Length: 89
Image (tube, rainbow, N blue to C red; front, top):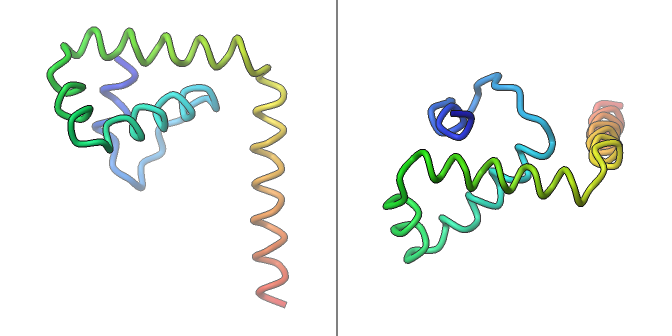
């Protein structure tokens, strides 16, 4: 029930997601940001929503090697850290 855990997590929560899980959730957020699609998504049984979420995660993992995703995440962290450093100095 990973998807339900994400939905129930407050914005400042510490739920640990893999890069693939974050990407899959962002896809679902994007889809459900559309009025008609949002309505249809929430009409889908939660077990089926979870299957769709896990399928998205699996496809992302298969198509984008995890090492590449982790490298991108590290680069984003480094960029934010450098920006913060230069702003403070």
